[in-house]
Image (cartoon, rainbow over all chains, first blue to last red):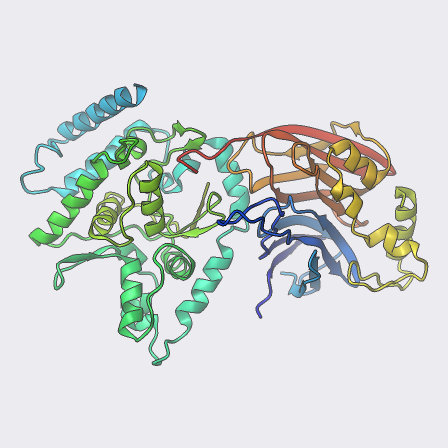
Length: 103
Length: 288
Length: 161
């Protein structure tokens, strides 16, 4: 199955700007479907970005993060061609991971 | 009611603008249509109403009308919500049918960079063919079941095709055929006819009140209104096609929505697209 | 789980003691139980809290002082409460985490980010807002908590939506 994670990591000097968009419903559990039944909560709880074996960002998310969640941040010390690992785990125990090359 | 006052003043403005260009759009209704003059009057009306706006900006709908909304949109465009549909569309488009043929076989230039030519008038059939219709006909001609017109696969496919035409100006043609001119006129008539319990025409919102609010939403100008299609609407939490927007718009004014790709809708799309000739395709797009 | 433990442990890890902490994936880098609890345990309790005061207390164990060194970027009127682009950037030194709260949401805490050394203290994300509410950004820097607040209006979409 294709990855749910889309990453763009662009380095400029010492700084690498990372943007990630993840395909995930991020259901809060508060929304009802057409039949009036609450759609159960289904959301990413933790999203991790790792460079050189170390976390460069750890996102702890609740259901108030939007559907198809997005995050942007920057970190120092990487260069073009290096790899960035992105992984997430959600409240149902599902997970996904991908590795992106820094441009 | 304010609405009526605005309508009559806006309509007056439109008529005056039309008269100024030596054409009275409604006076000629029973005579030979003059789409080129209509398009010029339409464009002039909006340019006059928003003198600070560059012509191409009109394709951004409500985002060209409000600064706060524009910033939110620009931030989301960095990594837009239609990204997944676009990717899916590209994959679908390149996947052959069971019989080995593909979408590329149904379109000029393999379907790449052709979106701006739709809708087109098919002289053999005597009808307006929209992109959505063409895609489903392609599927059926190749032994595949047609897709729903309003979202999902149809939205993904049209998203991809729009993307390959990004930046290209709308280039809708009305052939020298009375049936084509009639289809155009029908579309125009639909656009200006009031309907539904709210008694609104398309023009009520999109010609008379662009940039103003209806409840909490900011209205898009009619000029360039289809250029960003298909769209990811925050309201839908998903993608929707032109068919989806036409049907939901009818529902929202408490009218009875027509079947997607009905004659009226295809003619409406023909008229509206022609009005935006020269403005760039910006789809797929995002909207509130 | 206090901030002090967390900072100390993180510094230990980041200074290259040779341990790789695979966060949230069930692998323990450092032998002691404080490792996961301090650095990577999902703050379940904080996400369950209703008010922003309770959530901040559950997450950090202290309260925050307003700071003008935090730039919180929000729209004035959210286009749609489901996807509100919100970002924070700060000139405070020694930032270790940034959190976002939406006061009027059923549970105030929306997101919390651990900012390791070497990461720029600036995060942009898209959050859901149930209704017009204060958005609060919390920045944890050098063991202290700072905050910035902005009100964002959320309206029901017009046109029958």
